[in-house]
Image 1 (cartoon, rainbow, N blue to C red):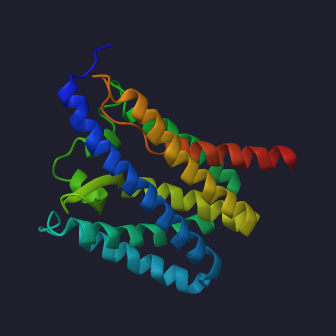
Image 2: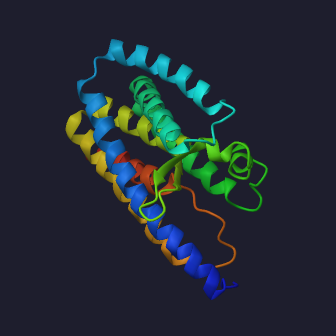
Length: 225
């Protein structure tokens, strides 16, 4: 296994450290907003909001100037994704959610492998046209430039998983799911911090930590009950 050069490591480490801070800030904001929406937003209003969010999201990512002001655009799209995820999650029974989370994690891992490079997810990751439009950005503390973090698909899956668990088991278990997702994000970052020095590293599946812990949570509740 080849190791990256010292210059490559310094450059990647600097970008990774800043991106990690933004990811943690973003997932905490996501958690607060999602928990608030699921707890206090009336279902009928949520359905209307979900429909409007789909329309706004499609309009935003198909704009010709989507690469400009990408920080603001990405957060507008993230709000839309969260709203859609909460609405979808309320319809999904936990018996369906469990295999769905396992499937999403499996496909996510597969798409980062050599044999999975032809999957739709892998093609989007490698698309110079669409990938920049499908990411959430933070604002660099040093330069003020956009800092790429996670994709909208990751937040959609997080939102669906949380909303389904929250709807099925109530506020307390929903809070446990939120905490599991935050811890999962941190675990992912810790793993990346250990493997990015190798030349074979091209990325890491963002769903495996958060959804993996949600799977463990749901299975544990099944066993206890």
